Length: 401
Image (cartoon, rainbow, N blue to C red; front, top):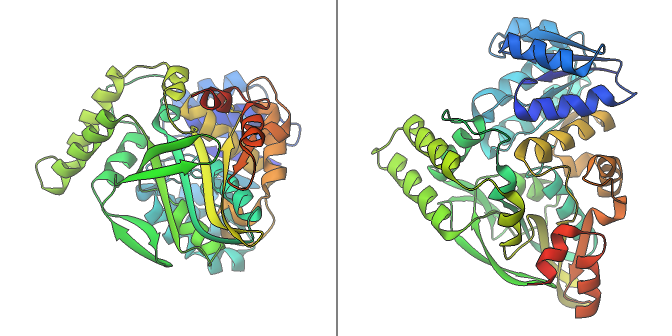
């Protein structure tokens, strides 16, 4: 398999490229990035399979030409509200399969609307194969499969797993994405319809086996794609988990942009400065949370009674944004779904198969069954506690709260 990684000199792209270069299924890996020197350094690190290629993803003709020589492209170039649809359009023209880590709801919708074009070209595109979205979608699919009827689906992620490997004074694509989401209305599902509302609304989560915790509504694609895949869903939001003072700072920056006090670029620079000054100890931040660092929760009916089922990621491929996003992307590329069109991950991957391929890349190479830890209101407290403690350092921390 010939794989092209766009943005491969960045942290997320580099994490994906390392996994791909080490896999026997990959014959050739192209490390493509706007920063030519950094691309060459990454290619040299990865060995003889890898070659470097400078590329500007806004140069459509050059991008199409590069993709024509690949079987699949893994795109990490963000922010996706600027670059995502253009890169997918090039993949369709080149006849190249596509996976990405798009975490913006608007370009996700735009790219989903390109389904017929991708299908006609015979290519399969899978959007948002990272942590949230990505693993969160598959955790949600696991929850939905465990209920007889589903009304509400929540997905949540902790800001502590969104930390970069290295801190910079310049805003990253993730920071720019964050400012875009806190300064605009976001899509959520209310009453069976997609509506837009202000972000960072406090939402109390009653999590089976753990108890109550608070998350804050955030602009991620999961509500959009899950309601598309499972049309019976009537309520769905994505939640960011963070201390109240961090949420208050994000709300302040968002309002500053909304009211014209700050430009988006200025707000992103302030956020990058704040990120650089925050603590870097991910494990401590995760342990202090009331809820799992990455989870999905579904409510509806089981056995004729109202029920809630939750599924948390019990093992992780690392403790930085690069690892928890880039490594799932690599797994998605290696699985290479064969269903022409444009899809979210829950429409083409089963949780069992995906987590089975991800497990060897997680810390300690755990058993695949320990990656998804399920608790439910229709189980006993002891059963839920055993699930939380079974082979999972992360959820065991929460079981002891």
